[in-house]
Length: 289
Image (cartoon, rainbow, N blue to C red; front, side, top):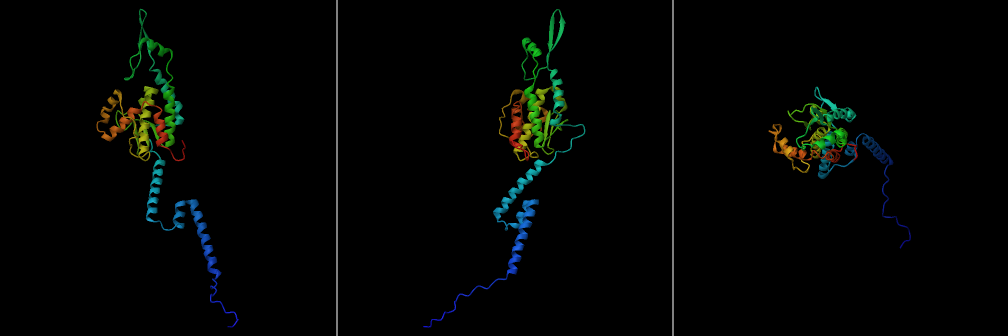
């Protein structure tokens, strides 16, 4: 047997030219830079260029994400321009509103009229749900008029939260005759009849809170422009609220609209509830609780 070294049967792999490899690396770098540039302008475009073809499940996920983005666009859309004669109410105009309400509150204080022979007659306005006042209660009310601080704090909070959520609050006549307030989802506009201010802080806060609950009902259904949806609150009504729902303004309302109104009427006197619902249901983009 010869001791001469035999050549190895494993042949060396042919050397590849470095030219194409360099071009491939350069092409990859170009694609990466292009992807980064597109990512700065819009991540979805970069994802479409650099990612492989999506499977069916990926496509469904992308459609779901698109729905969420479209919903955010709806939430960010502007309200319709106010109608002639409307007064747009913002948090900046709160001092003027409170001054008007203060003057209206004075009209609810009892007035004393002397009748002669030492007799005095007291005149005062009373809401339907309020019981009659005794002489002692009237005199105490004259000595210590209510500050209505609870109502004023609620009004300030509601106006601020509605403004942040993108709701336009307008002092102007609602579309429905006889309505004290109205929420128009399509217009992103909450309307309050002008004469509600003349009824004072208690009535104004109640009406604003009622309509804020309707705003939260829309937000529960997807956004400010959505049709209101029940929040699951109590719908137990007091006699005065039941009387309101029997008003002709609701004569043509659907059963769903009646239930939505029941929910708002049943909770409108809880002045802390409206702001809480706006925070929970109508979070504006970029707004943290």
